[in-house]
Length: 228
Image 1 (cartoon, rainbow, N blue to C red):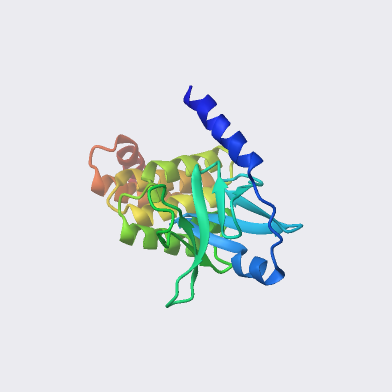
Image 2 (cartoon, rainbow, N blue to C red):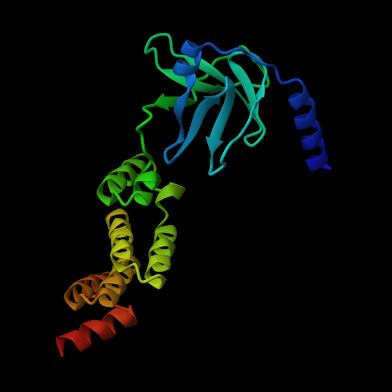
């Protein structure tokens, strides 16, 4: 029932979508990249003077245009508005409140077109820069979903299965930097080194895993056999 109601709302709003003859200056000012959260962006762009967005992997989102500055995004189920902070002159996307449409909030900051989130940098294999970004996220929120130990481990093992050993090592090294008190991250890094043929680094990391958790049987077995 809720889905049908939602679809009805979208249909009605879409029918009300306005055609705006955006000026080139306006399009230049408002198009670009807006920071949705610490590791996601909203890309705003125009094609043939029509407004479009990219968000969460969607190739193209066409919002419902309400007026020159305001539009509704069905994928977010949110009404957004282009605003400028009067003191800093920085541009934002503001989430329009249902209770007070005239209130202005500065929710999603417009950043440089060259701005890359940590995950974007990771995909580009810029591992050092990605790590710096993840560390900044960790400073603000040590429990952030974007630095989850298990997620990095899954990424690393996925690469191991594809025999992309160096890439897996880089992912596991990021996990070690983010979670240095976890024996599991050293264990995973050791396994990646071992499969890549670097037995010394495998030993060093299994040894560290064992120091953190004396009950880590795999680490104990490898360390003992390496010494022998």
